[in-house]
Length: 136
Image (cartoon, rainbow, N blue to C red; front, side):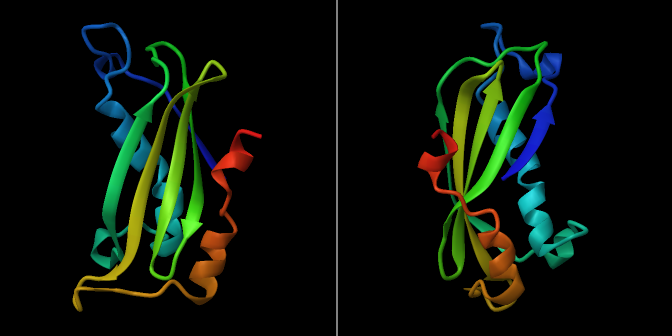
């Protein structure tokens, strides 16, 4: 599991006084850099071998300005050429949101998915955690 801390900025808030729901997908993407580095260590977009197939965010509680948010990131499913990244946003020991994204290992030139094999699959499997184990 990867962990990253985000310090909310004032512009992350909305008129209701909490973190705007549009910020969570951006924070989750930032925290996925740890996963992206397994594929492209220098994060060079010209070498990018991934596409996003699905994104969902569940909101559990409000998040607020002035307190750090901890983003926890893990692999919750590992398929043949796709995998699911699950992420939680915690603040003050409370779950604020959970996000899931399905990413596909992809060859942009061939316009086709590519199997996850060898060292890459092993690296992803090292971060494979069942969602139920996270809250156990």
